[in-house]
Length: 166
Image (cartoon, rainbow, N blue to C red; front, side):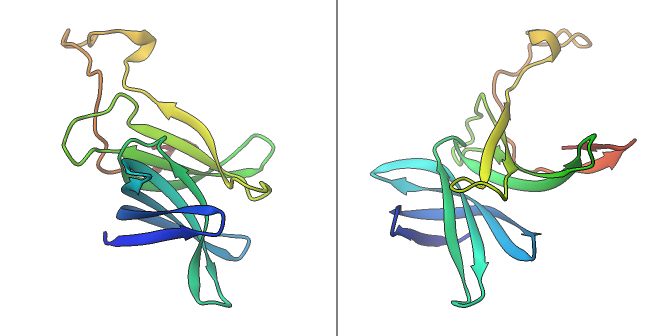
């Protein structure tokens, strides 16, 4: 990734280093989600930035910034899941991997796409913390201590048995 400056109008100005991006199309419009690390107000922080392609200006227009929730976003994945009523929901997963190599306790955040939102199209859905089933502190198979933090450097999705896995 390169270094880019964004901001202006109602968005604050900050400079960031792009670490990953993922594009998707919704209702005939192109969107781009960027995972970045940058400086905002003198503090280095992670950000997830949503943009859409403006055909009139032939440029990406930033429409949402989620700053600080994702410690050090390094990878992105987008996937869709159909609910029982047949409605298809799009999700964007963000994995964090700090550049200094120090793992984080909340390495994965998931956002739900909401095309009907008026101000936040990426709606925070949930986080995946580092833990074993039932909160166990040791592995039931090896007896070794469970990790308390991790770094996620890549994400992928696949389908099996009618389910979507991340």
